[in-house]
Image 1 (cartoon, rainbow, N blue to C red):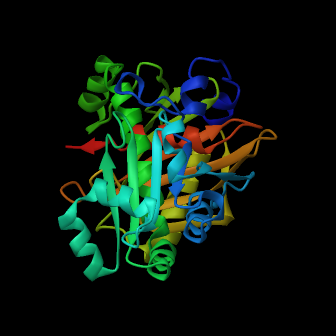
Image 2 (image 1 turned 135 degrees about the horizontal axis):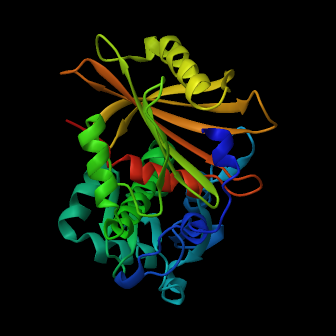
Length: 339
């Protein structure tokens, strides 16, 4: 069984969790992880706010459709108190000058940070449990409007990743009390890797001629796969063709004749948890049925065994947003460890 089997497993077990994200629960915040409250001096009319909103709402190409990682709601700083439940908050503004946003940022950062900011001209800060419990706030501050816009343009990916990382942290916090300890221990003892498998996931397939493990959560289908390849040294971007070919063979053998599209694929340097990784993303399709979708694979090298571990993330959710589902898989995949 493989991708095609997963595509038929559309129950309701995990739908609310995957689509809405985790919202902080008892810690206080109650909005979706996929929402961001953007706070600036003038809200939707603020020049820096416009640039921040564009960065946070940047379209993501999942080949089967374009999505946005976050839905952005822009408000003036004076209206912040009317949205006390926001899980993700981004505050952007110029310090000094007597503005309300400047005073608010100053109160968050303190005088020492403000002093550094004046000399460095701009900065990005991550603040947990600000303005309240369970909320994650990213402060983007600068000494002038021009510095602020420049900071947003240069550090947009970093700002987005701070929010994404915070969302994945919340997901892992949620799953921490819902781990299938027996299954997780068996995978470690049998295959030599560790992963914290939530109780909502089950083994779809393992072993066989193409060695590996496929973990599935139904409704909509999220598949997390782990396999391993003999590899002489740590892979680099220059090895992308070899990595693609190795994964294409595995996918064909293990996933019921599925095919990876050589024209729709990209590679980049990345991390999986604390490990450096090569990240491959692209489009798969079935040679046996009308089915296909987006996948992401992290290649992690284990030098002691000269192995490349390949950790697959795949969703099959026709007509539904893919990003929250992939965010959940990514959060679980970051618990991957090898011995």
